[in-house]
Image (cartoon, rainbow over all chains, first blue to last red; front, side, top):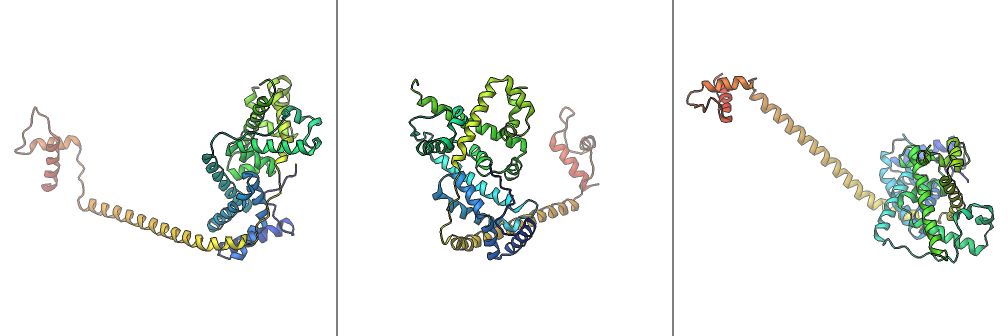
Length: 214
Length: 150
C-alpha cells in the first residue's frame, strides 16, 4: 500500500527547504503570528483530517474535532521544543483527541450494536483468495462488504481501532506509530496483531451467526 | 516456538518481509495457518474503509481564529493564574522553611542521648521514680532542665 512519511508536508519545494520553512513558520507561530500558524496547519490539514475521518468514521464530527485539535495545537505550540518532528507532535495531539472522543462516544452508547444487514457473508479465508478479492466483487457485494467492514470496525475498542487505522488506513510505519503513541516498536507490533485477531474474531462471529445451521 | 512468542513477527510477514521463525512455525502450526488466512482476508477487506478526507467547510479557518482568540485568551489567563499561584505556593513554602530553620537555630538542641536524659532525670529533685523507671514526662523535664540550667 501507499506509504506516506510522517514529515511529508504539502509543500511544493524539496524536503530540506520545506523543513526549513516549516521551522520558520513554527517559530513565528510561537511568537503569536496567526498567519504563520494557519500556514503551518494548512500544510498538514489534509493528513490530520484524513486521520480524524478514518479514526472516527463520522464525517459530521470531523470538522469539530479538527477545530479542537488545532486549538490544542495553538495552545501547546509555545511549549513545542523541536525535539520531535512537528508532524509527529501534531498527529499525537490529533490521535489523543480522537481517542478521547471515541472513549466518550463508547461510554454513551450501549453495548448492543446494530445488526449488520448482509444477506450472505463470505468467510475471511474466502476473502483472502483471489476469487473473492473485493476488486472482483460486483458493486452491490462490494458495498455490502464495505458496510460489514465499517460496522465491524466501529465495534472495535478505541485502542484497536487506533492502531489499525494508523497502520492500515493512514499508512504509518511501525516506527512512526511508536513515535506518535510513545510506544516501543515491539509493543506496537503486538498491539496490531491482537487488534487484527479481534477483528477477525468479530467477523467469524458474524459469519457463524449468519450461516444456515446456526 | 510457541504461537505467542511470534506475535511480533506477524507485521513483517504480512508485509512480505523477512520473518523466518514465523515462516517455519506456520508450516507446523495449523492454528496459525488459519490465522494467516484470516489476516489475508482482513487485508483485502480493510482497504474498503479508506476514504478521502472531508473538505473543510468555508469559514473553517475564520472560526478557528475566533475560537483561538476567545479560548486562547481564557486559557492564557488561566495559565497565567496557575503560574502565579504555583510561584506563590513555592515562595510560601520556602518562607515557612526558612522561618522553621531560624526558629530551630535560636533554640539549639543539645545533643542528649536517651541514656544521658534518663541519668539526668533521675537526679532532678521532686521527681519520684516508680520502680526505678522514668516516665516520658520525667525525661522531658530532664531535657528542659538541661536547657534552662546548662
